[in-house]
Image (tube, rainbow, N blue to C red; front, side, top):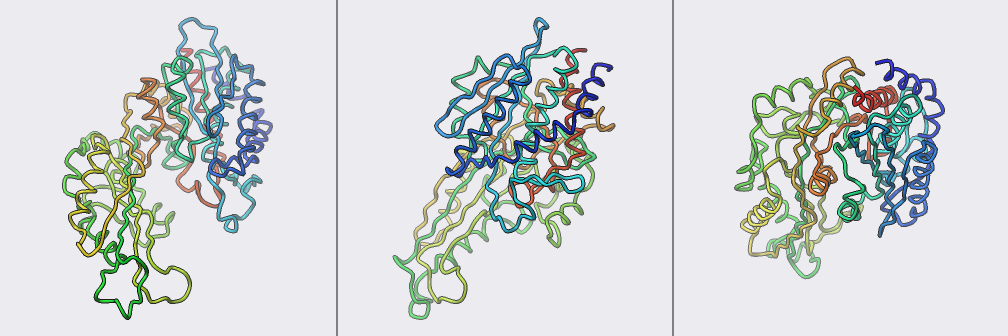
Length: 456
């Protein structure tokens, strides 16, 4: 306990200097999707390399890829037979657009009250630096009880195109007993959270073609099927009145929630009012018979992510559009096979498309769900979070997808511990992204306790 406190005190006493380093990395516009920021991506990788060198890491290397570099660093424990922890992170960020909606420039960090506003403040430079500062605090005050490795990529926001090849080519370098991925988040500032499940994904694009060109709606309306009307009718048939997905067979392999799981999820309390306030909707919507958090992480969904057809500029233009497009995604839960779901969607849509138009379905991406309620190191992390916040950990199935967790399990053979210190209202991927500093500060302390727990 004294050793833990010495490391925590180091962090608290040096917090101002460490915070400046956090702000420095936020100032680099590491936007992975924009080729104009290629040099900024390299600058961020160099920043991390330089910081690891100051910490005295045993091995540091920047690995080039076809897109953006991967940073690796390792610090070995002096203890024989020490366990090895691999910490994953990504240093790339989302584009800041639309710029006019930011209250302050996105790459000029601005502290307002308890928050730091900047692109990447929460997702996920804040979480990377929390992990690094925790390690630094231990190294400056104690003997490190475990081996610690970092893998920090620069392509997560563009789908990690280089990561799988890197994992497969460097399995020995990345060999570990535990994996910590702090790219998840907390239910609220007072509820330390471990995410034990992630939903999978099927993403398709539906295109309906009618006439070979846009037509005059007065001359041809009523005789030519309108692709916009057709796609709207198809979309209306994808859900039942109770909010469930109408595709036959969609739920056949969905793993039911056990009473114990429902009890664990319910421990987070009711979040309906906070979600209404956060989103601005008049009331919530969803599949009947399930709570908000059950629907969010343990039930599959189908959503239209984008629609396009005809004239969408200002003013009027009376046409029958030549085509209509819809982007559609499904979030999947354990035991749902993405290939099976894709085939079911394709078959169902084909069965309801009228013969007055032509339909095409394009497959964008598929990914399975992920369940890690038995990830190694779980008890250590849960105890560290509970001690820091003074209350039991909340377990959550995350509504989103983090493909790297599945990739690491398949290639490295280790399930990931998923946590983080971002909050639902951090506006990640949106203007005015922010990080709640009191939560982040507690997060660093929890990670210190986690690292030190292996000395016991």
